[in-house]
Amino acid sequence: MVRALVLAGSVAVAAAAGLFTPQVSAEAPHNAAAAPCVAVGDYTTYATRATTHTITVTTTACGYDLANGYFDSDPVWVELGTPMGGTLLLRGFTGSQDGVTFTRTLALDRADPPGRWTVDDVVVHDVNDSWHESYGVGAFWVRRATHVSLTASPGTVRPGQLVTLTGTLTRLTATGRYVGAAGRPVHIQFRPQFTRVWQDRAELPGGSGSGGSFRKALTVVRSGTFRACYRGGSWLAASCGSADVTVNLGG
Image 1: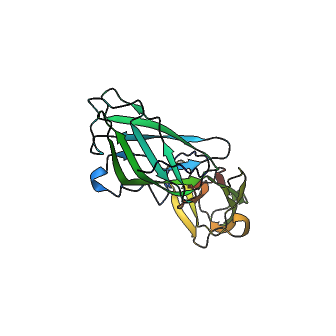
Image 2: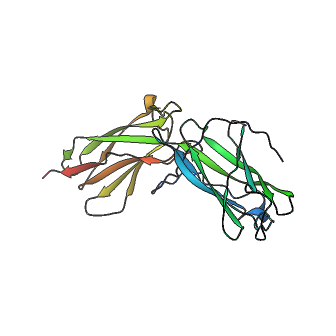
Image 3: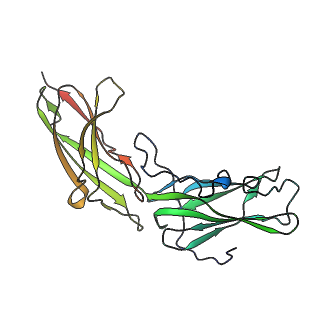
């Protein structure tokens, strides 16, 4: 059991939602027998606030039943491995009345390293003052927020004319600034007026250019709304353009 603690920054995150869920999701536990032992979701870090997630440890799934009581008030420890090679030891879990399920809120922020975090070690302290351990029980991902802006010109065209879409993909840094995210793929979609379905119109596989900027000309035949989306990656969260552009067709 590892009792030393090396902190690799502070910590805070919330999972990206919507149509474009990050392509890399929370991993299944490495130890199949311990699959329900620890539950923890993916996180997205933001610029001005810490985001929180609940880590749940089910001791019976870890192979140890504390329903008959436990030795002290701090019977469950969880050790996390950070993407930078450090460790974060979590204590102070709150137990359920049946002594089976223990929970703790983990707060992560932009200063915490993005990437793959591992649940390396779960320690359970039973009523007989014995320590039990489960190793390698899972992993999750911390991703920094991204932002996509989008404009269209001209805003009003005749059927069959071209509309030029321009935008920028930016990513959050550890200092809280957003900077251009170059080289990441951007997907352009269109939703016809009075409908709810987004249609794929173009993919820019080469990604955003210098400073995260991108540009695409498309033909339109009916009124509707364009949006540009980044689908996320191993350390950047997914996002879509916050300023959807409506194109009204002229007569």
